[in-house]
Image (tube, rainbow, N blue to C red):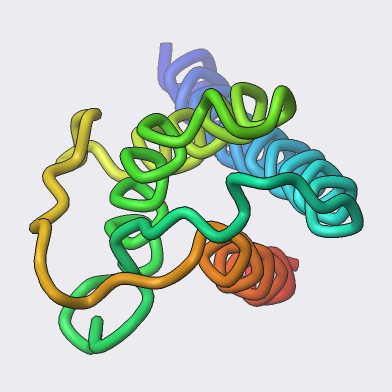
Length: 138
């Protein structure tokens, strides 16, 4: 009986490790795809690039990366009409932010304030943030 119990514990430990690795791999795939899509968007120019959006990256010393990405998903959602590829980025951000932290639920509230930037600058900030998060998760 004790041998089967130890085998069961070992199996459960291996299963837990494997599911963590799978989650990290899945997050990595979503990050890479979002970075690729943002690269495509940033290489094209459209008239709505100058639209003002909330800058969730400025002055955010208290929020962690997942909170920032969740707030960014809200801003991206509000800008879906500008670029066709933003829908993919929005869905990827939701997946990354909500699956990485059990406390985050979409949509994340974004305080509308005086801290705005152009959509083009916001997407550049999002691109840099995703690259940093991807590098930290290697």
